[in-house]
Image (cartoon, rainbow, N blue to C red):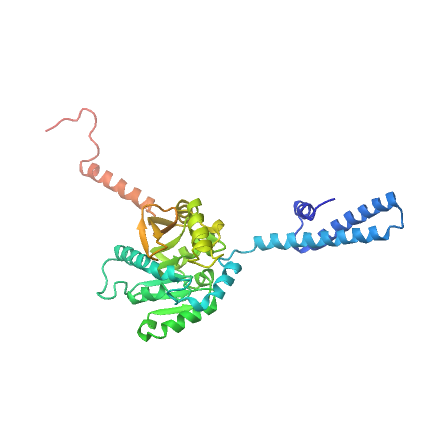
Length: 361
């Protein structure tokens, strides 16, 4: 028996285009079906109607499986999105709990004690001192995967103009509702239900900084994420990421302990396969036009619920990267002409280079 996968690969190997794939699979499976039935009938006679029906079911099964393989392959070839629908469903169910400081998002609230100063201090180092009481005033920040605005609001209170985006509309509504209690804050903070790649098409080089905190471990495509961040950042702009490293220790603590034993976060929140180590993340960002300035390890104390900086990046870590500026290309023709001119000028003044045996007066 030929498997549906083998049929499909045979069609691809023959150079069959997608619009002809359906017909090709149907023809191939029909040939297999007819040949098999003919062989069965030859061996066991013409009166085996039940067996004939059995092979007809096999034919239908082959068709179904082949088309599933075809649709999956075509979907993989389609343009990638950062959004994973399964992740969106998880956060859809939690959209009303963003501002419950004792609930599922409590670790994110306490993480502000580390991540807000990390973002603030690095931006001040990049852009110099700012207005007292609003150290980030004049800077425009994009908060990717902002959820209910747990990090967006503190950045706005530092004086920055912040746009928070999230594909979960209910989370955006919650962020807007919570922010509405502080009208002064809402002058600097805005929200929008969209994806990063959608925004990148209309906001090229529009932000001084991009923040993606506890986001990349939930994305479907990190290459698209990195390219989109590069596109929306100004040259010299900063990218801030906090995420979970991909190690055995992170699996034991972030999933087994935090989700299954201590229930600090809901079970099923994280997928270890989507975690990424600092080395791999740095390699990805540098290939997308970034330079990684710093990486720092983070640790959550499950007893106190507080975060602290640590030397190891084996569990959680924070990263600061900078979009590289394009260096101006030298005008080689002009430089050569200037060099030639400087060389010939002294010689012209002296009436040409001294010849052999030239003496001194």
